[in-house]
Length: 455
Ligand SMILES: *Cc1c(COP(=O)(O)O)cnc(C)c1O
Image (tube, rainbow, N blue to C red; front, side):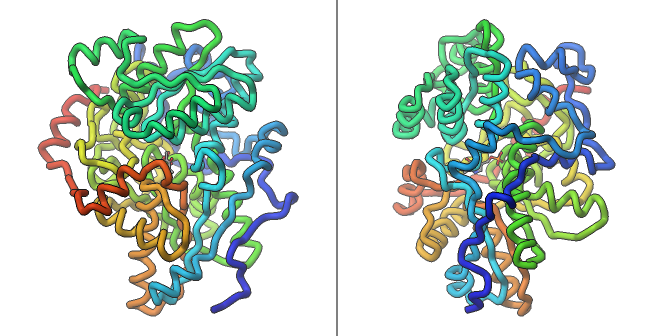
């Protein structure tokens, strides 16, 4: 074993990023503007301000400023759990017998268990700065709600979480972590909002969807004085906050003179992937370097690999701005047996544009393969990975095995976005041999896409 590179690469205090990077500044083809759903014209900061904090609305629409200073209070909070280690997966390499060098950036090292805290703390900070009483949000698997409740309790903000009903019921522990941090957790669709009541009437017994929970949270924010809506993925502001992942990764690699060949991230709404790859994609866009960047998504919710690049609603309730993105249609709900997370119908507009321009590629994987990789990884590297993160593990292992065939000693870097302690229901299904794969048919996807707004 080559022990020159430590098992974990940490950064010194003075090597930590002090700014977030906005890759849009380096994109020649900017993501298409987000549209006001009422006028279908590009939305302005003023129009976004009833929904989002003003500073975050500005970040959302800023496609020219390359770096945003990270406020000191956020840097102080980051210090409690960052830098996240960049781990050299020596044990995995050995087990696979690959000449490849595998590295993973581990974001599960905080109580919320995922990278989502990186943006939650930023969004809570700007809400506090604006003098708000609280924020509303949705959560699917629960990682975002947990991260946000931690961030809100730090800044003494009220936190109202609409949790997709199926997760609310299947993940009582996740729910109780949020309540421990002081959040109000409501199963969605609920009877608190107009959209919730409407969906409950139309689809009695529905177990909910992320899009529906988003609509409820937006309605709750816009109908209560002193509240704004915050979102844990998809938006450009979130992707910008998540660039701490990529910036730390790049500094850690540079420190040891390592040039990444392949960079892999799982893609739900695209925030961890976008955050991890931004500094590297920036180099590609400026013509300074080349990387093989791979987004990995579930075969049951394949927005990049089988969706359409079109304007769509970000939410089922059609209240949020419209974004041009790779989408399966805002009404798309993955089949009931889907257990691996990453169930959002669309994709970050930045990631979508980078994909459309060929800067990144995408692959879809079936969930039984994902859990097989998760179990393998847990046994070899020790960390119990989140199902979402395991999409990236699966493709990292595939790439490392390709290197075994070709004899290439590639440097493979992947994002390990979180831990899977609250996903044991899904692991149980896998361990019991009861997990199956469902891949939507072309007809099902076409049916959903037929409802795209005509713009
Ligand atoms: C939310 C989440 C994801 C997917 O979200 P992105 O915005 O695509 O990053 C991936 N992994 C974990 C652990 C998550 O909690």
